[in-house]
Image 1 (cartoon, rainbow, N blue to C red):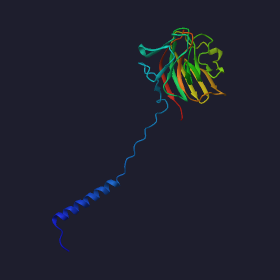
Image 2: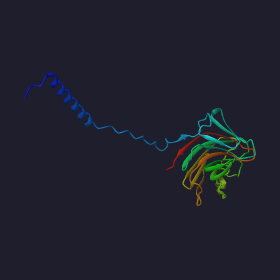
Image 3: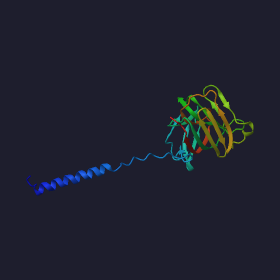
Image 4: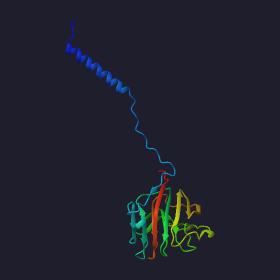
Length: 226
């Protein structure tokens, strides 16, 4: 057999080394892309109002919604019609925490699973806000024609504080509605005839032009399983 030329031997050796390197690389296990770790309960609250503008919210109607100093969301009635400020996102099951102050005599509420046609609600419920005694703040009112579905206990009608900041926590899980006002459990109600299971959250200014409400520190914990 004729002897291989020097250049031929070098070329064969380089080819062998390249093959060995390729084999060694293929044997190295590829690292899997890490799966994002879910936030632990208690660390999964999201700031629903950024304290500077109305990003993530949509006004419904002609009433005034402005952001003032110290991260205060101020709703004022300008007409005799209803007014709302609704979230851009739908929420099914959730916990919502906020602080509110009744500046005037108007009525308000936290609507959930709601939808609108103009300024008229087409579906949904509301957790009441009204700082007048015996107006059932933290009770639940249905927008499907049923009206009130649950009131707080009579001894808790005075828990709301007019002209002061009130701490409000509401929870919706399926057809169970719970509310807590200034640290007091107000209602825990399972609805036998629930309406729409999903929809927007909205803050309300009641019709009549007297609405004058302030909100701040609005946080949400989305519990929805979609």
